[in-house]
Amino acid sequence: MSIRTNYEKWYSTEDYYWGLEPGDFLEELIQLCPPESGKKVLDIGCGEGKDAVYMAQMGYDVSAFDLTENGIRKTIKLANAKNVSINAYVDDINTFDIREQFDIVYSTGTIQYLFEQNKKEFFEKINRITQKNGVVYFNVFVEKTFLELPPDWDLEEKMWKSGELFTFFPDWKTERIDEVIFEDFSGGIPHFHCMDTIICRKMI
Image (cartoon, rainbow, N blue to C red; front, side):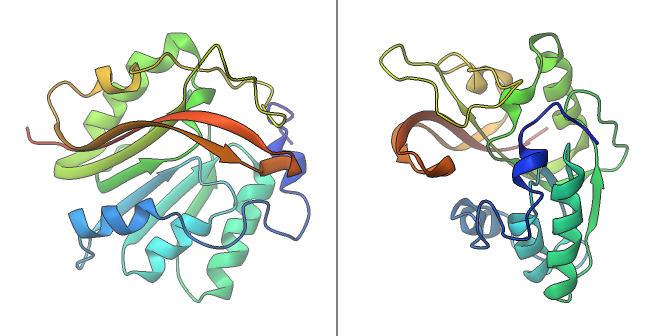
């Protein structure tokens, strides 16, 4: 079992660390790329699967991977409880290799686990596996000198520079781009994050 991330331990209980409510951003993705027969979704760093399972409930053909074995176990458990089928498996964002293409690719709270030397190749993969007219969603925590590291900051997480995420999509149509500071209570201790978010569409 991997010890590269504390989430392996945090996901070991039967409770869902992040709860079961899907992320609000999914509704925006659904509007931009409505579910139709054969529409395919990839969730990169799916955690315990609440977002991936919701997208399967909406009618998408969903694949999802995470570094944690416990996260994937609970993703499959949740999919079974919701009577949906999902392709969930253990993989690493730094080394994953996928040959098929997807209509929606998203990742939330995960790409700060990318090693610096893998960033360029990672986004080249994203371009390759996204269908023309497909939509991607990414967010990442960014460094602000006036904010302390979160109390549940993980072993291999690295803060990004403000605006860095946006530079990897120069030829995509931007649907939304923003940077926000917000209060969070993960780990049970109030703290603040700064997060950059991009939603964009592959045009060529």
